[in-house]
Length: 331
Image (cartoon, rainbow, N blue to C red; front, side, top):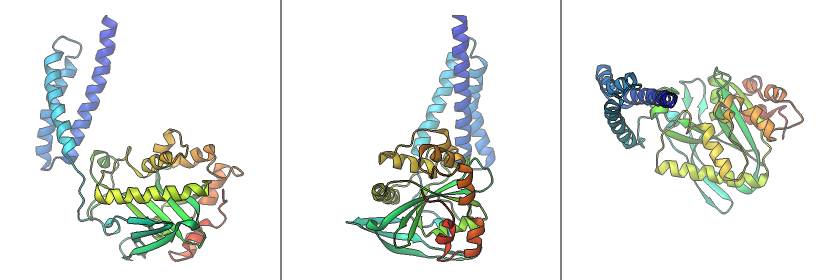
């Protein structure tokens, strides 16, 4: 019994410590007020938890644990009341949510982004109403944009049409004009989600040519008959998001996890794998699963898919998409 009690107490201590850390960060990131006010609330929240931890291996645990659980319950109830905003002083490039309607084989999208970027601060805004013939859908390409850590990248899918048009989709953090991206803060309901539909020279080109990220393209082997249903799901998700905002979450609701749930819903078999979260390694995973050209190693596909030199020459114009794909193996 002594050993079981020690094991149970150790497990309880880990759960307590995690909940105390989570609750403290939730209060810090989401409770308005000055820092001293937040510190005070965190101290009040933590005090019974620390007392419970100290007495976990004694019979004094129950009362302090009940007091802490009551406080944790209040924090969880408050947490559930936090709703993502539908209006805000958003950054200009994130100010609009795309919406669409499909009639037969014709897709009409409102607020397709087509900014003309000269620098990160100097650009011409353009939000377009665009029409696409879904019978012309032909290809699906993956763009990964690395900004420093090779383990993490931003994920974008681009649908190609046989008339030379490309429609890129990007799921992003909807920042305010003065806001910034923080994986930790966005785990604690810092910003809502936004789904962008864009010209490639904008949403991809901004990262490759303006931010100077290390952007790679991978051409995916997906049957053509699955492209239309996949695009329809993106449109449906965008329409739903326009009506019902959702919090961005660094782990559970981000650019890659949303895509993965979508493809699984369509019957495209993507098993659970740690590389879906640590998405810098997503190409290796897709290569193993048969979604990339098997005649090349993943190292060769990565090298051929690096677009920086090619799009630096083409610039952010109508030749951008052709240049990005030059020399990249088709599936």
